[in-house]
Image (cartoon, rainbow, N blue to C red; front, side, top):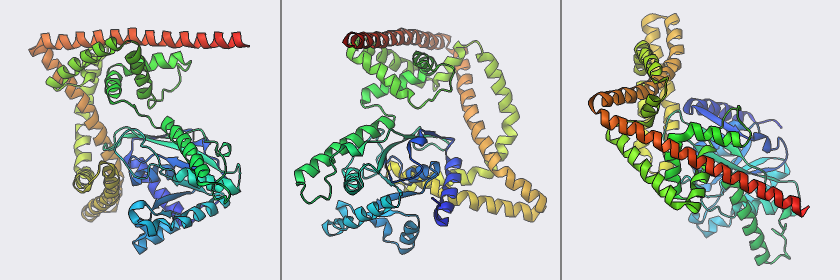
Length: 473
């Protein structure tokens, strides 16, 4: 099924800026979205417009989004949205007279499904800053049941989880995870049937909404409890590599490329296990880690500085990074000079103009879309006017490369700065530095014991289940 030219152009532009704005976009199980036929995507909504750009950029099919009707008030924007296949939705805030027009929205969805189109909805209803999924509304279930009522078994409902490593960070990572389809055919197709009572329809909607909620939650990497989450994050910082290796080996996946995104959830499982089985142990570990991180904060250190000091290769790494810092300084200076304004101004504007945390990344991206081409065009014109066409081309090609090299340089020197600071602490306050080293070593030993106990408990439970089913058979 071909895509119209307007959508194709917008998608190409979106893919470029998504690639530019994020260090890596990881896509998990895109094959779960059928290449043809009616599909309803149910997506969490953590980051405003960027969410729609991400999903559209990773799928080969055209995505018809459901969006707030207020976006259609501007005639030019309304025409663009119509060209992109966006379907208007009226919310409670628009008033009861406007909400009655959602009959048109359901009719438009049914018509799109009849044509084998793919529709995307944000069932939470609005963007939010929380890491976990909010309670979703019944809209997705109503749309699915409405179409199921007159076309049984045709619609595929796919949950989608968008997971941002750091919401405000430039060149961060993001995971787009497509879940197992929700089986709509197993729910009563009572929507729009005149003989079905309101109680029957409400029950079907509620049951399907709950199933979609659970399916979406499985794709959103989050920690349900705040206290568990805080400790899990602290464990991840210290123990990420070792726990990652042991968990994946226990699942028979050693040697493969490690997917980092599910790890916080796996660590949270370990923490929650001991919180219920051995709360004193968790409390003791939490207090030790709080003390260790307080020590790091007191001397403005990162954990990596202490970790690398414990490794045999720390000195070699420090020397290598020192040489990289010296050699890369001129390249950093050039890249930073020619890219400072287009990099800094979008972040500054986003901080000033964003009234909500969920608007920051979108505002920064849109400002970058304007700032980088504008400043690069001005700088390139000046170089061309002063040095000629050849230098104009060379300078233009150096702009994006110089910017990326400057960004990498800042990240690398940040690590080196922490290591040098820890080296100075060893010279001036050796006792405090050694205490941090000993504290980290002892915490790691305790985590290793906890991990072995956790994996042993999991294997024991697996053997019990296997023995039970053997006896049953």
